[in-house]
Image (cartoon, rainbow, N blue to C red):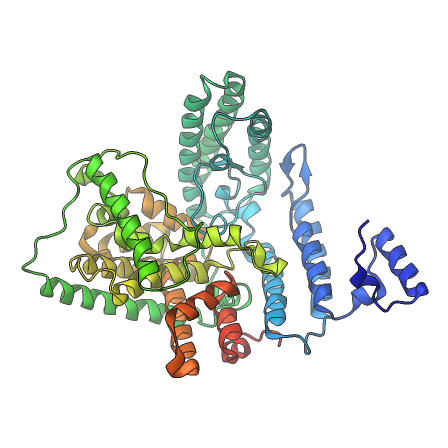
Length: 552
């Protein structure tokens, strides 16, 4: 056991012996029951281990009994945290305290309201094929999912063994899911059917990839795919008779915003924000179209090679602009991926929303890819605080992460990135409008005003130019997240508004010496945490903290 000098500093012999005995027995030492910041770090590490499910026979246990035990244990963690006196701590330390509190509230909300283990078939994920551009996968899912994007091909023996074990556990996981999924939630089960169809496609692709170099893994992939397909059929049969709503209700939605995601706006206030931003973006779009009416429209690339070239040029343009205009400090490790090949151009009828944007100009969504630069920063320069060095659980980062990426599109337009691309400005306002539309759908799904079908109809009919088709992957993936993760659909616009507010407050406080690069560097240094806490730490303004009833 490693005991630091700091632990023993100033301690008497009896105290030291007491501490050692307590450490060996696993109990709290006397001074670890106190109110030091170090006690919070210790509690946080215990909490992170506790919130993981027990793993039995390589399958995480989400049975009713296991979840009852977890909920009882959560109460004890919450009591220990609430007993801490943090009045003498610094603001950054108080921020960390409230982050831990929010995570515990996230698990509490899971048990009281979301109950993904008994309501949400998509929770029992079998495989993920692509890395998310945000800190963690959006929405709740079982512990220990097979993340194929993490592996390099050809697989090493160690990786092959890991993949084999995870594939082998999928049938057992889905057998448990059938026992655990007991609640009537028609829309969540509809999304579950789509999720399993997508996972089956991933496994079919993996089967083709492994059939030559790793034939020993083929039977495991085949059994996993059969289990996923059989589970999808099971869902389809039961979904036909379901009538229950998947909405969490406005009261629960507001509690979740305030106590887990630390967002000070209510459901009603968010609806008003989304509606106002939708009106603003649509009005400005029409003005842009009027100004550009004599310019030729943006055209799709003629072939895959032109598509590849446009993508590469957009990467270089974006990264050079960040450096040359001194937007923030661009580290040597920061980069955006360039395509290895051109690919094919989809026909108009097969294009989803983001194809419509990218085929006209890659640059707006390169702005949104600031997500990847943030992930690189988190990996290369982790925050000094253990609480902020790893992604927060329960998507607590969502409004900060998606809000920045959305704000970045319009901000970089105002900073001059699109000065030589006037028609690209139109795409920026289409992106803003579409995110407002999706945010409104999220809000109305969880108030009970919209079913999944209603939300699809609203989005398809309201999105500019009809660019979001009902049968496309975008609408199903997005609504799947919003149904399962209340408020995620609002984070793009509400997070953008919070970032605007922070920028305005900070520039006012700094005055004539304000430099945007300094602001952004400080913003990144604070970490990927809720905007309300970023604002408190960067400005000292505590009005949001008081409105949220956070500990100070």
